View 1 (cartoon, one colour):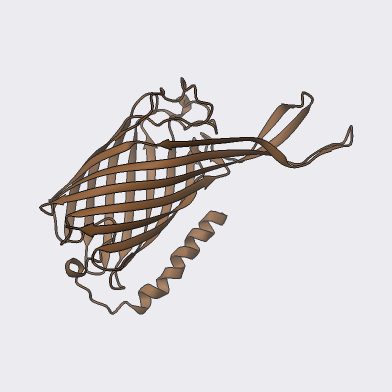
View 2 (spheres, helix red, strand yellow):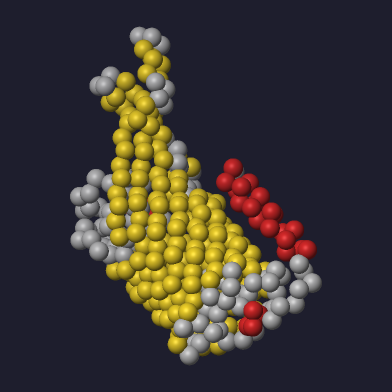
Length: 319
């Protein structure tokens, strides 16, 4: 509930800005005021982007969507049962390059570098039978710094204008050699798996508003299960050279969740379902330089981390 309140507060804080600038009539193509990141400026051929993102979770959803935020260590010191909590974090630095061809074909390459960490912390403990008191203390700490994958992709616009349709596909190539979740010998997390995403995106555009709907089939290798990812978003462009948007993303597993591996906070889930909300604000500093800031919160899920986090993007367009 706390995360939902924060999400709504951020969204509401931008609404007065949109209202006070509602009389602007800015030509969308000339000013480039569609989503500053998601669309190329018409005069640019290349784009280099730098992302920084942080996501964290201190709970997860089990297969029945129940929120789990702790466990019990039944063999602490060989004689006590002691509860502990956990905090999972992921910090990512992402470099992405894009090339626009004839205003209809977009080629891109993407390399994220992530640091995964997990802290387990015992709660304060009191044993009434022996009057023993144990303070809150660390149970274990895990950390992993890896290059997640190399992503190569293409987007092709088959229809442009008031109503737009794009087809897209990409492949994610991991750098490690480990095999999935069940046979993964690493103590904490994994090195990702080969993935392919392919799908379609449709957009309705006006001079002040945009609505996007996309759906992608996500093939995942090794023992990770395939899924469908669907996104619905809307944007407002009433402030010149800026953008505010909000959306929802949901993932649906194509396998039976009852067959999933039991959720393990030390490893990536082999299959999951979730619904995420997000809000973002973008600004074009000039026709070649811009930024976008976004916040994301997970509303519900199954066999999934209860994530929330933010993302900051800086990008430059050039010939």
